[in-house]
Image: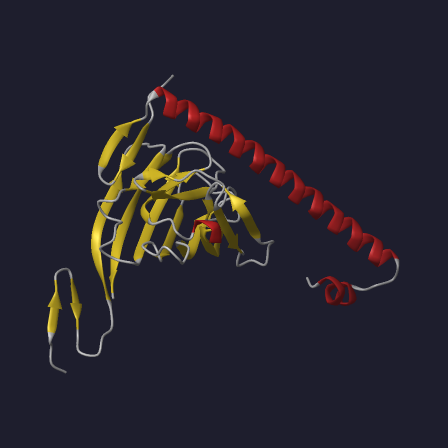
Length: 71
Length: 189
């Protein structure tokens, strides 16, 4: 396992093996959470675009849609 | 106007009510997993501190997080809350029970010229009845090199109001801090 360091004020301190494992576990958890968050945001954006398309099909113009959904 | 008082590292003119004193000016020149401001600089000397950090992530796309130190140890419990909103009208970001404080809405880029600059104020760190808080702004270039920014309000939950804070850790959600600099100021009351 490659050495990793933290900086405390102005000093470099090498992480212990236990600290490296803890950090790696947190990084994996954070990456998973961020990936899920991005996926949810993409789904929301897709749903929004779909909703706008359907509203236009009902006859609403862009100004009316903007007034309705605030964009 | 007569000069009535000169402070070490700052000035206090007649009529002025406070000033900032530079306590730490650190440069991160090699990759580190986290940057800690220890109790050497954040302690009971001041109740309020101003933190400025300019950080480049080693990998593309992380968030910038922070945690308080309590009793000399970093506090990792899910005792933080945060809220923020990007300036471009995008969705807010928030958590009521998180194990960290978050300072950006969009992923932070690591390509040339991409980085995050943040400034925040640590407040109520010595109080045992008002939760410590960290409030400020971030500017960054996200992974498509576009500039963005957001204010953020972070801090301990009410249940941790008695925790006295004596340090701050800054780190990316994954990967190292490639380079950067950090300044810490004490706010003279």
